[in-house]
Every structure is written in structure tokens, then in C-alpha cells.
Image (cartoon, rainbow, N blue to C red; front, side, top):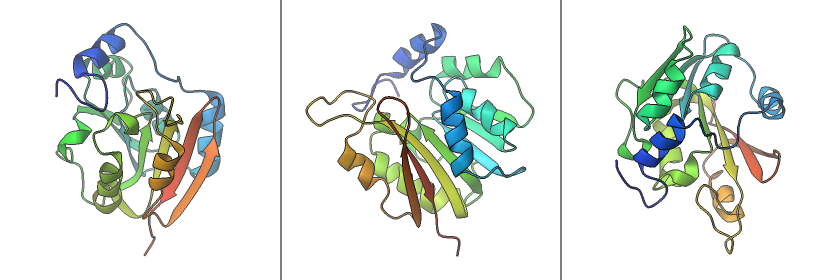
Length: 192
């Protein structure tokens, strides 16, 4: 993918990764809130969709997950691989292009989409695919997205209405706020 109406081209993401730029760095406050809402399950499988340079993927592994980080920026993945960890692997894939090869159908316990959804062509359809194809019964999804107003629309954010629509079809949805304008969704599929 070279361009996308939803966000920057892969060459732009590559340049940002090469320059070491980050978009809303991971904080201790966010990690503490995540740990309160997502029980740690050693040996469970997680996917960090839009993992960038891998900080959250590595943290998921520290929490006990076997992790696959997915990104479409080869430069970001190269940076992620500079900090290797047993139990963390990375793959290049454009999330707008269907399911990644080798992803087990209904075999994932947790999918993370941290600051990724607003850059996808159809975020709602992608989340439906994650819920219906990727996650096990009772599987969970962690979503972080910046809130923007319809009038002050900017790339990388979603309106309150768009965020509310993301919770449709989930058995459980918990929303909480982080610093600034970041909203987190803790979503869960039906267990039966």
C-alpha cells in the first residue's frame, strides 16, 4: 500500500519510524489501567495490530502473552526487531488487506489496536472481522483512540459517535479515559 485516504502512506510511517518519532508514547498510567481491565493470562495469545516499533507488544509479553506484532511499516518492524524477545514475533501486513497469513482462525485471546483504528479504511468492518474470525470465544480487544470533534476533525482521531459505534456487537464494553483526549475500550466477545 502506498497511499490511503484514511492516513499517511507507508513511506511516511517508515520515515517517522526511521526518525524515532512516536505517537502517544506508552505510559505507566496506561499500563496500570490496562492491567486492571485485562487479567494477565500466562500462555495466552495476543496480537498487537499496528504495533509500530513494538513497545506494547513487548509489554504484553512481560504480562505473560505470546505475542505477534503486526504493522505495515517495514522501518517500524526493523526497529521493533532490534529489541528481540523470545515469545514476541513481528510480521508485515496491511490490516486493510484482509487477515494476515498464518493467523489461527478463532485462536487469539487478545487483540490490541492502540492508535491504529482511525488510520484504517473501514475500522468498524475490521473490528467485526477481528471479533468474528480472530478471537476465541470470550476473547478480548483493547482499543485506544484519540477523541476529536466533528468540526476539529484531524487524522488519527475519531468522534464520540464513531467510538460509540465501535462497541456494537460486543458482549461487554467498558470505556475509560486516559490522559488528554485518549479513550480506551475494553471489549469482550461472548463466552459461549
